[in-house]
Image 1 (cartoon, rainbow, N blue to C red):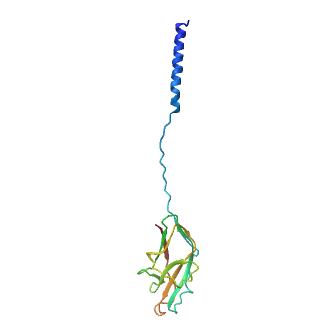
Image 2: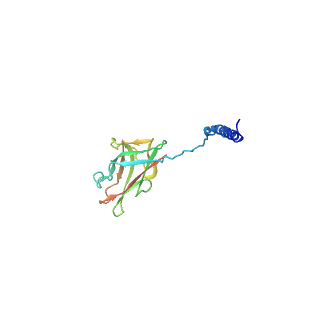
Image 3: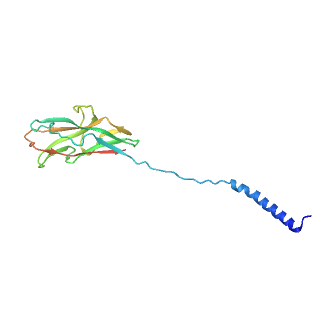
Length: 179
């Protein structure tokens, strides 16, 4: 027969083994939790010209009244990653009444101009030129990049008696905005 001490060990062993076998399913439990993910892709727009400056000296003859239409620069790239596309507007540092003003060095004389963005192979003669008031849309594009456009200027030179000979200048700022 089992001694009293041996019987207690056998019962204690059975109890430990029984507890161990009852605890085993606890390792198979699972837990779930959520991890919210979010992010923001910044809107990007770009506008790049092939030429940084344009000298209009040969296109604006102070002695010859008329309208001169000149390609200022090819636009090597303009676009956005916005699915709704983009618009481009222009403003002139010397604008007055929606018309850009090439202004003489002394500020006394001006020559009016307007601009347009069109296919870069155009000669500019039959285009509809627009205001440089900062809000008139010159171009509307879709998502992606456009590379076949150019900026044209239409300069109206009044009678040579109204504009003195000399240097005339202005700065055109194009603003590209995603929709």
